Structure formats: C-alpha cells, structure tokens
Image 1 (cartoon, rainbow, N blue to C red):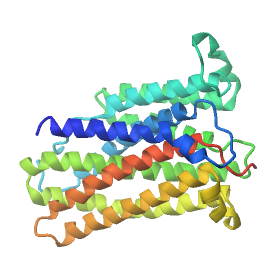
Image 2 (cartoon, rainbow, N blue to C red):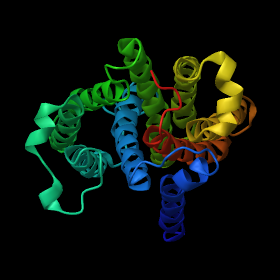
Image 3 (cartoon, one colour):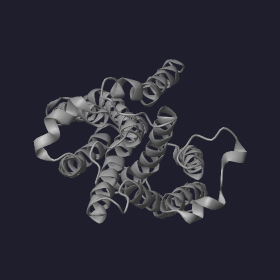
Image 4 (cartoon, one colour):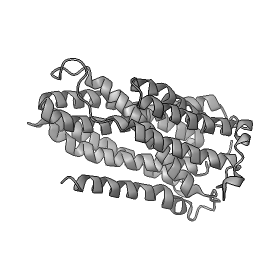
Length: 322
C-alpha cells in the first residue's frame, strides 16, 4: 500500500506531462498554422510553473480555513508536511527555462552561448521573465523560513507577471485582459492547490480529530470552491470572447489549434464541476461525509489535467491578431 500511492502519482504525473509534449502536433494538425519552435518544451515548462503556483497558494488557503474549524487542537491545528519548498524549486527551474527562451529571442537555445542574459533587461517580456525567476527564488526562501506565510507576496508577483505577459501592450485593451487573467489564475490556483492540500489534511485529521472536523474543513472548502468556479467560468468566457469574437467561436473551436485546446479545457472543467457536485452531494447526504473524498480525488486528477492543458494553451499561437 505504501508503494502503490507514490507509483500511482508518478504515473499520473508522467501522463500529464504527455499533454504539453505531444499536444501541439495534434492540435496544429490540419489547421495550416505554423508551430512555434520548441512549443512542446515551452508548454511543459508553463505547466510546471502553473503547478508550482497552485501548490503553495492552496496550502496557504486551506491552512487558513483549518484554523477556523472547531474540534481541532487548541492553537494551530495539525497540517501535513508542506510541499511549498519543492514546488518553489520546480517553479524556479521552470521560470529559468522560460527566461532562457526569452533571452534567445523566443527560440530554444542550443547552448549557453546563445543566451543573452543582459538582453532580458531590454524587453518587457525579459523583465517579466526575470521577475518570475526571482519571485520563485524568494518564495522558496520564505517557505523554509519561520514565517512561510510571507511567500504569498512573491507568489502574487508571479501571478501579476503572468497576467501582464499574457497580454502584450499591442493587444486591444491589454489592462482588461491582464485583469481577467489575474483573477482567473488566482482563483484556479486556490481551487486546484486548495483541494489537493485539503485532501492531504483530511487524511491526517481522520486519525487525530475524527470525521466531524474533517467534514467541516471539506465543507468550508466546498463553499469557497463554488464561488471560485463561478468566477473562473465568468473570467474564462470573457477572456475567450476577447480573443475569439462570438461570430467566429464555433469555427475557431475546431479550425484553430488554440480553439481545439480551449474546447478540451472546457470539457475537462465541465467534468471537474460534475465531480465537485458529486462530492458536495456526498458530503451533505452520505452517512459518512468523508466518502466525498473519493470523487474529490478524481477531481484533483482532472484538475491536474486542466493545468497541463492550460500550459499547452499558453504556448500555442493566438488565432486572432490584434
């Protein structure tokens, strides 16, 4: 049993990595669009970066919820070992890899001699890439310090940098797009990372505090998650309509790589929402509320796939040119 769970996690991570690596060729097939050099590697790095954001943000969120649950020990309730330090390390390496791509003119470098580090300071994308590298480094140091909650600020800097990077100044109303991405990415990180950490916490609490405390924590998370889902849906639809006007959506969902991957993401989010509804139903009506953990675990797996598809989506060419 002790080996089964880690092996299953490794298999799921490997399968998720295939989405950004193999997805570009499938999505671009027959569209007539040119592939970006190294798009598979860039998509994988973005997937790792997004996952590295979700883990610590979710931990901070759920640990805060846990402190408001009655029935736990006095003072700070027990929480599982933090995954924030390794997540920050993974995010740092991913951000460093993406910065090296920006430093070579958005081309995959063949060697260290191709990387112009000084050139990063000369462009907007380069400065944002450097900000993400430094922010993950600071977040890692905060995570291993006596005040791990301070990592919230460098993580917020990464979210802001991603929102600005996704909407260049040449785009129509870039601040609107950046604002939508900022809210969308924040809510997605809270939802995905929060559910992962909530399930890890419930596993620990089942033995220490019993079923009632665990059910209370899951209930608190579920109420916030419902709001997060509504905001994610609204900002996602708005952002998509900014890139694909309503009269072109149906055609672009099947005729462009961006549209195809977006459609796959929408279907995955719909599946996640169905699993969340199933878990919430069990939480309210089952004799043992913690049977809701079964669909919640499936929801975490589906959310992991959503993160991988999101990483792929950010690496593909946008169909509409502003």
